[in-house]
Image (cartoon, rainbow, N blue to C red; front, side):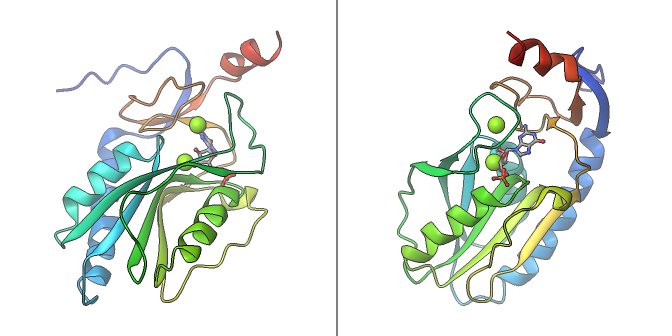
Length: 195
Ligand code: 5GP
Ligand code: MG
Ligand code: MG
């Protein structure tokens, strides 16, 4: 049994490890049902680093043939506010031309990152782009991104408008290994930005 102890930097837990596992299983079956209707394997593109745990849990539960690749799209730095100008800083290895692509994200916040990535994949000739995000913060959306072709939007949970960490998500590269998702104590980032 993994320890249930909550990290000292966490104000409150939003989703426990068990709640995450149950929801990821549901999203995976929804996605699997759609992928089974496609004539060929999809390319699942995880956005590093935040999506790594969700990606790993998700693809193991999708019993359909698929390729997995990673991309790095960055706009955040160590702060908690997006710069709004994301860039692809590490590109795909797999050729997505003519392929159905499923982007796997940790969290869609303003929508800038996903919008940048969709444009990037479209330019590479993907025939459809879906987005599967673990968390969705619709209250903070500033970009109305368009999916490509028959692409669909899948999400694990709707997230309140707070800065969250854990289950892959970081603050200054820490907290990614927490098995749950929690709200970071404001003093944890105030400490850093005030000096
Ligand atoms: P967007 O471009 O949609 O504003 O932000 C997308 C990226 O910003 C996410 O993929 C994630 O890496 C980061 N991000 C947005 N909100 C949060 C949050 O509450 N916690 C953490 N750790 N990262 C976030
Ligand atoms: Mg991300
Ligand atoms: Mg981050």
